[in-house]
Every structure is written in structure tokens, then in C-alpha cells.
Length: 447
Image (cartoon, rainbow, N blue to C red; front, side, top):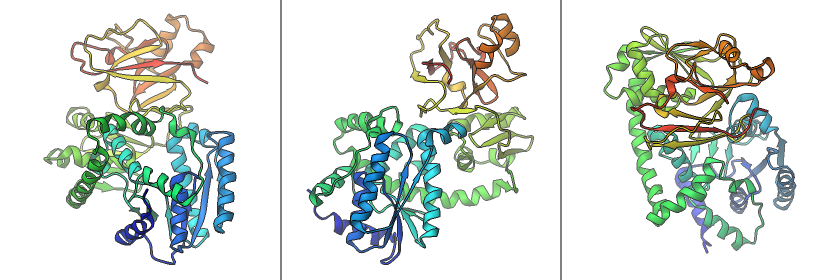
């Protein structure tokens, strides 16, 4: 049992210069072991705190019980408590994002409101070293560049993470040593979420291969962090020479970019803050050579290949019921339930099932777009080498008006990939040159 956690906590805070004695902190308190241990440690060093609890209404009665528990904690420690309830699922659906992302977008602006209102200096959250490792693995899977391999940092602007020096097991041991109760979040066992799959499935397998895997990765993260700082200095100079920033758009000089030896990483670092995926970079670069007018989208921005520049601008066109689908990070809250499988067996034969689409994975721009069909839509039905209006396809298939209005489209950028339950697009079919197959199974219809 680790009884020296308090000394290590103080040492970490001082070494990382996270905050000064007497500075008031807004402490995010879920009621779980991690955040409650942080509250206990902060009060033991007489650090002034106010508590902030988010009820995301994701687990029904459990969420309300968490809130009730946290209210009792604020009385026990005799510290102020702020509580806010969010309709997280509705927000996620409105924005077309995952519930996890929605919770993040809701809580951090609220924490900042409390920080200002309570005259606090910083916001403290209870991420620990296991969280940092899991974040690194998520970033590695999704492709977020060198910065993603550095994991979670102890301080980012006005947010500090004073628990990064320890791990989940040590925190549980500390709670037992101190005789402290805490709440368990049942959703942490739900392996539909990528973080939980990494925690409960992937990491245990890695530790079978190397029992010291977690410690090895933490040591590597220190090296990645140092390397990232070196790279950032170099890239800052390079990016400044490539980019022109306007009030509402950003322009990247195509000629100058293509003349750079490391153009892939430079482009990725420029467009990543606008939500573009790492797998889009090679396709964007290819388009700069011979496809002017080519359009790419992220959840928030549009990227257009112009004659001399790559133009990045916010999306203003609001399309009803538009959702973003990332097969590498499935969102369980989409209006259509999917399962995804990446297959590298070239002999795989697509099943004759209209609810299953087998696509050439490397031809897709991620994230995919899930939307209703729109007037003017066209695609290349499987088996055909010419375009056909979706409205004409519906007529040929004798699809009535009601069913037509309920039909979902899955698109890659502006190109239709699949009319769900009917036909995939011939341009994304499996061919003899296909290396990776994305199999998408539609589990249920739209809400």
C-alpha cells in the first residue's frame, strides 16, 4: 500500500509548478476515486478549493445518486459546491458528435465560468498516468501525430492535472488507506467506448507480452514530449511561411507546401486544429497536384483545393440531421446503429445483404457523413460506370415517398458511399487492388 502519496503529490505539484499555495482551484469532482482522492490531497495541503460537479444525465438514477453523493462530500470537507445538469445526449445529436465529445464540450466552458465567478486561478481535473497512457493509445489508433504520443500534459493553459504522477491502482490503495468511500461509474465497463476497450481489452493483452508495458510507455512519453517541443519550434517557423490567415479563412500556399521535404507533417499540423483527420492528409496532398476544386470536410470546417492555395474555412451551411461517423471511434449515439470491421483478407467475399456494405477502406475520407438524401444527389450504383440521380434510383427501385424520406445516405466527403439498405457506390467497391476492406453492418434503422 502506498502511504507516501501525499509527499509525492506535493513533489509533483512543485516540480511541475502547477499552482502556488493559497491559490484557489476549481476542482472537477465526479464522485469517483480519482477526483475524490485529488480533493482529499488538496485539502490536506490546505489548498483553497471550490468543487464543480456535472450531472450529464447519462446513467439515469445512478447520475442522480452521484450528484447526491458529491453534495455530501462538499459538506464533509466544508467547501463550496457548484452543480449543473446537462442534456448531453440531446447536445451530442444536435452537434453530430459523440457523447464523450459532447460531455467535454459542455463541462470545460462551465468550469471556466465557475473559475471566473469564484475568483479562482485554475481548474484542476483528476487525470492520472493510466488516463495518459490510454489517451496516447487512442491517439496512436486515430493518427494524431507526435503530439498525440505525448499523452496528457500536467498543465494546459488554465487547466492543471496534479494526479498525473500516480496511477489507478495507487489511487484505489490510497482511498482504502484513508478509509474514503467513492462512487463507481458503471459506464466505465462499457466497451462500446474506445477508451474502455483499450483499458479492459487491449492493455491487458499488451501487458501479457510485456508486464512492464505501462511503465515503458510512460518513460517513452517523456521522450516524445521533449521531441515534440523541438519539432514545434521548427514547425512554427515553417508554418508561418506557408500560411496566410484572414478573418474567416486560412490559406496554405500549395507551391510552397509541395516544395517542403516534410510536407505531410506540416499540413497535418496546420489543419489538425480544424478537426481534419490524419488519414485525409495524403488525399489532400494528392488533390493539390491535379484536382482543383476538390472538397474535404471536418465536423466544423471545409477545406477546398484552389488553384494556388488550400483554403480552410468554417462550415456555415447547416444541413438537417447531419452526423459524423468515424469507424475507428464509433459513436453509440448515432441515429443508426452500426458495427464496423476492418478486414485485410483480400479473399473476403461481400455478403449479399443490403444491410451490409463492404468498401475499399483506403478510398474513404474520414469521418464519413451520415445524412438524409437531398435533391440533386447522385451516385454510381454498384455495377454501373455512370452516374445516376438518387431520385431516379428510388423510382427504379419502386421506393415510395415515405420510405424515400426515411432513407439514410453515408457519404465520403461529397461522394455518396452507400444508400443504406439498398446499394453501395461502384467507386468504393472492393477490387483486385483493395488492401483493406471496411465492413459496415447496419444494425437498426433511423430514429
